[in-house]
Amino acid sequence: MAADNWGDRARIGLFVVGREVVPEAEWWAMRPEGVSVHAARVTAASPWAPWNGDRSAAALAPDLARGCRDFAAMAVDVAVLAHSSSSFAGGPGWDEAAVAALSAELPAATTATTNGLDMRLALAALGARRPFLVMPAWMSDGIIASAMAYLASFGLAVPHAWRYQPLARWRGIAPDGLYPAGMATDQDTPSLFDQVVRECPAEADSILLAGTGLRCVAVIDALEKALGRPVVTANQASLWRALKVAGMEARRDGYGILLRG
Image 1 (cartoon, rainbow, N blue to C red):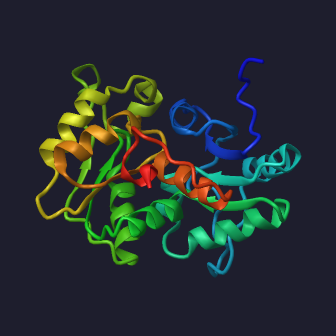
Image 2: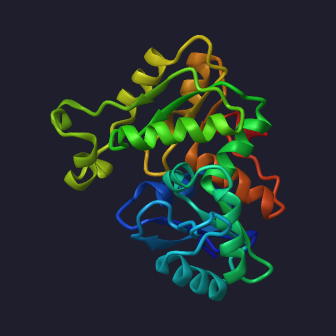
């Protein structure tokens, strides 16, 4: 019989931005055989699970609550809140609060996680403490500052942050105008590679490409070879974490030292 991508080894649910195409494409490219990926679309503002008044708990946006019900019916092994910006905007403690809120709506057999938590665990597994932070062109100054503060709160000293500069046809459009103008589906990985290599500071011990909508996993291996340092990306980190949670030691070549094990 022909392969049908059935998740007989693990089934993973992703909460993704409603208009993005990158997360699923990258996950399907990287995932081992026997692992299936299933998306729930989210249109909420960041963070997707807002804090309550005293920041003692987070409440799921309606799209996440609906997605939890769908993932329960699908019997997914892991549910990933695949949105870097939610972790950054939520700040310290938000990942754990979001996981608690998701877990309350998911079956006991399903493990919840967030992209911020996954990236932190991936950096820790590689012994990285000073990541060069690279973010999509459409990220605002505010969210980049939030990202740096978030990482610093966990002892990660970012020596430099870089917002990817898009191709000439997108120049002149402010960062907050790029996404609605359609740049998310018109990304150029060769120019991303060139910029990361050019801008990476000598004092960085790793590279962190944050933002699940940033198309970048195709250049992980090339960046590691060019810079001699490990590379962590948002989608790669969450896949790595999901596979571990699902009890899989599956290794994947072509997507960096993190997934090679």
